[in-house]
Amino acid sequence: MGEIVSIICCVLTIAFGLFGFLAPRYTAAALDLETTGSTMGLSELRASMGGLFVIAGAAAIVIGDPVAHAMIGFAFVGAALGRLVSLALDAPPTQKVLIFGGIEAALAASLIGFNHTAVF
Image 1 (cartoon, rainbow, N blue to C red):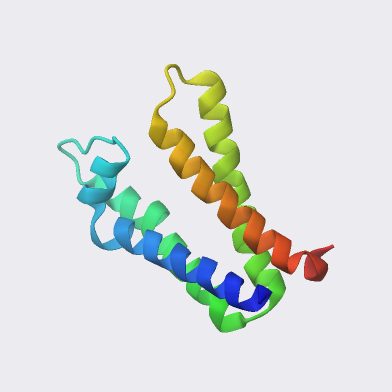
Image 2: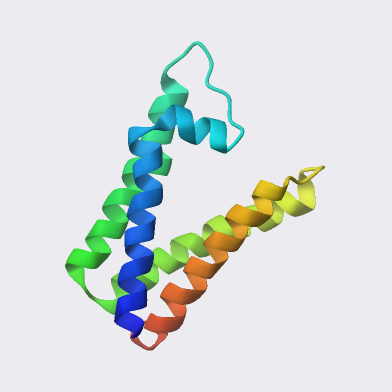
């Protein structure tokens, strides 16, 4: 069961990454980000919110080692932590912070929870 959940989480990671990779303007709008006269913002979305997640999720599936799946979970811990800091420091917080943070926390808990024996 844990292996199936881990693969599903990695497929979701790939799917979320594909939005940033293939549809950076849509991703920017969904995240309340602005794209200005430069294409650098689009490039950043394709790279950091796109390609990084696509390749990380795909690599974890291909490698198939529980440690690889757990590492994706630890990346989501970092993302969820960033959301917590945003809740504490950025006023007023938006509902999107809670939604995206909840998704990231759930992915982190699933990937680490089902693969923790390989790590610890």
